[in-house]
Amino acid sequence: MNCFDCQDLDIATPAVAICRVCGAGVCHRHARTRPRVLHELTGTGLATKPRAARRLLCGTCTAAESGG
Image (cartoon, rainbow, N blue to C red; front, side, top):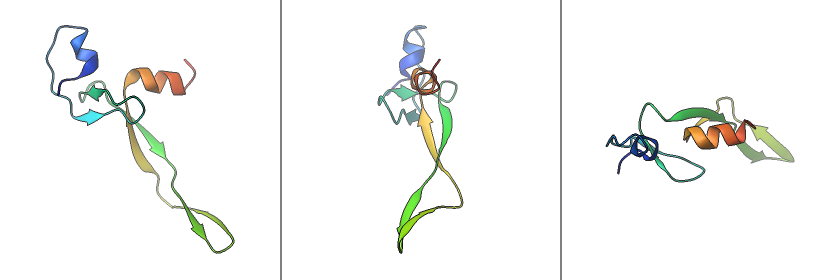
């Protein structure tokens, strides 16, 4: 699979990840990493894990989530 964003530049760059939101293949240059806080049901409430997980997104979905 090749990077979807590099395709617009007529460059065949192998994808190294898949966007978690839209499913597009992204290369290292176009991949964006965002934290994802994990929760777990414990006893009578919700507990937040001490470390955030990693979410990989394309540039388009990153911009859409940040409102810009």
